[in-house]
Amino acid sequence: MKCPICGFPDSKVIDSRPVDDHASIRRRRECESCQKRFTTYEIIEAFQPLIVKKDGSKEYFDKNKILGGLLKACQKRPVDAEAIATEIESEVMNSLRREIPSREIGELAMEKLKNRDAVAYVRFASVYREFKDVETFMRELQQLTDKPAGN
Image 1 (spheres, rainbow, N blue to C red):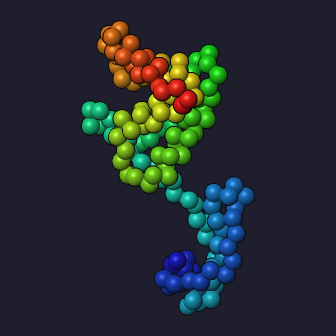
Image 2: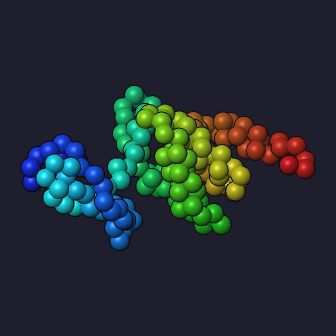
Image 3: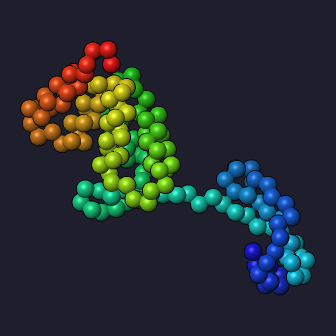
């Protein structure tokens, strides 16, 4: 760290401690040339992956977008859409991938809904997969009900 007093490029850390919000660190430093002390603050840089949409455009991941779709699908259902959105956000952030196809986010949401509530799953799938007709909708329902007994 460059000394703000004399401009020397090196300093040593004397003391470090988290700031009250625990999102940054306060460091007390000493210049190795002039021995003057100064304080610096380091903040955590949030990692934001890009979501690659169907048309090839890209935008930063936004938990609220997936939450909006989940809330509609889970309306009047005993499903915590916020918890599912938080799980998806955690998986996206922990993947440490720079770019993620939007298709993967949608599939992840459907997988989580399928394990919690069949009605919410079908609602989400009908919009996400853009069912064009009743036959497509019925095929999805049939796959859902064709699970082997005991599972």
